[in-house]
Length: 500
Image (cartoon, rainbow, N blue to C red; front, side, top):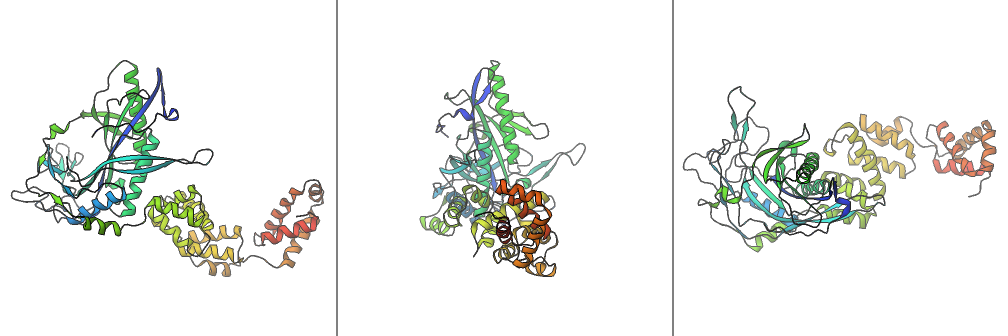
């Protein structure tokens, strides 16, 4: 790939060193496991968590005479992903053999794509922010290519005192390697890029994005330079399986390289590993070049070819992607860019919100989903798929507020009950006597009692009318939060002689 610098150096992203400012350059190669029931070239299952070596066909084990047969669904998934990345779809691509020798690679080579990938150049737009003024910065990150390849197996070195074992369950599983251009200039940008890419493939249904299961992992290329100078020598940090670790690895590696250069040394191109326990990278091996792998076209596989109709049919069936959904939420529902960004970050969250917002005020629904539901789930360590409050239950709570049946304060209490105990919100309100008091006679009686009991506060209100809020609070407290807040406010002002 030809390295092209498309970014203007930005001082706010510079890293201060002992001898001046530095700029970090980041590119990423993300391996995303294709969502399919079977592997790229065999019919073996891809189900996660099965016993070792139980998802292995004769093809995966490289038995003599076994020939690969392309999985059409994996091809479709790659094209869908390319369309989601607004990338060029190459209607003719080739599979190559990438030769290297390791115990978990039974063929002695990996079937991949080298010069002619299935997907060409595309882009992802990431957003950083909000800043102190509530503004977001949109940055376009280029995609160099996406190619299909088969995964290797897994070597296990902790099962026996003197031997290593090999599990071939992953051998032959379809991967999409998504290669970015070196367009990122900070660890925050890299984390935002990985987060956005993960969100896109999840929306598309082409990868589940479960990094803890290894179905999405990143090789992170890091180099540093003086601002405005040519790209420096890069080091590749292999197999980083957490967005947080990506950020930590970049921060450490940039500092390591700056330290070497400022001491008069040179950066050696190499492959490194990130140790999350120590928060540091360490050398793994010197970096191989393409010629080290002795790439050549796989003689067992014909060129992969399809026509415009194949691509058009897949494009017609794509779902609404995060950027389009965010724009629609802002345009049609009047949400802030921040709220819309939070809601579209995960497809499951966006689907939940839309179910709650259907037929209701979008801003109100967004506030409840973001502040109350997601806040509660975060406290309990659950994700949206594990929520104990269904969209119908949360929608019912919002409906009870709108109808004047309960106040906002009561609604908060009701939400906690539904969260911990479940049940129908309307039935809970009825059974527990949580209805809002709208009887002005009862409210007026409570207001009179509070005023009569606090003559000193009455005098203070005459000098400072905003003190009326104290009386409103006392009345709400005395009525257990059941009094209609608007009625209380109006009566307090009337009784104290405060003009609107």
